[in-house]
Figure 1 (cartoon, rainbow, N blue to C red):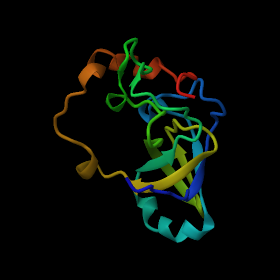
Figure 2: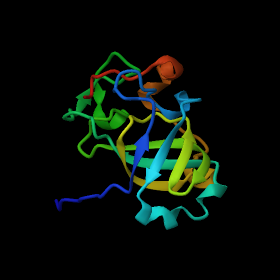
Figure 3: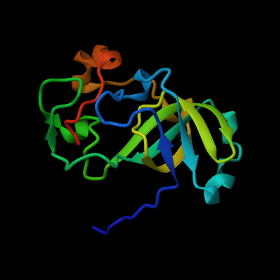
Length: 160
């Protein structure tokens, strides 16, 4: 396959300096504030984004280690297929988080519900639009038995 190369458009700043203790999803990171610094050259692209309450951040898991196709996810004690998890160590270490957009100051987004390591390279921003991004009915596979652990489970160094 052809190699794909991305150039970061900015950097994510948070209180999380180490992989241990980071909330494992943004819905479990309420009150975790941070900022997203966009390179000045991309600042005009932020126009009109301020009208959205939430944004989707796509980023590079820059501290993830080598991926394995079977992993033990944070919410479970059993090994699972990598693509049935949200593990950060992946063939293409791309992360996705939906965060609350508080406000935009110049080229900086001030956000809440941030579950991302400080210094993480930002690849893209998209507005969160419920009619586009929510589905009516769904199944969550093996996570159904473990989802109750979400708000009290934090990351450790297993994927570093």
